[in-house]
Image (cartoon, rainbow, N blue to C red; front, side):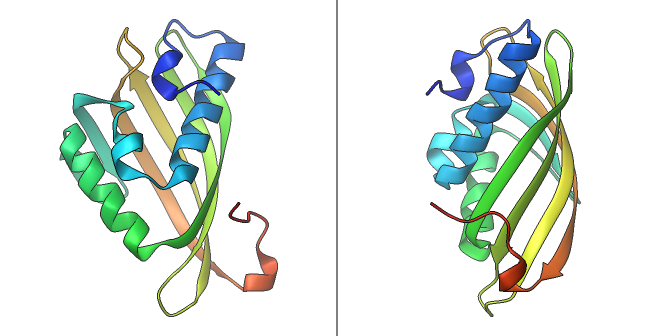
Length: 140
């Protein structure tokens, strides 16, 4: 299974799909330090209403995220791509500490440097409350 940084621009349809799958696999590991390695040292992020810069900020963000979003399970789907950019549609399910379940729907736009590191990530998403019986993505 390739790491996200093993797949570098310029992207073809096949390599863009592989990049998206590698990112999905990495995020589903819920390992902030491993996931953060796919981003440049000075990566720029917008995640909903948060804007921050740097790989260390990404790792801190993910550590906090996965301490609150329990049993997180993600699906990413290629939406569009160019030479060094990819857009994805995603859904993920999670529960909070009160055992309430949610499905999050959103879009991400990614830009990569020549080494395959993500230099820019722009994400928008909405959370929808669901019943546990309505889940379609399950943790492994």
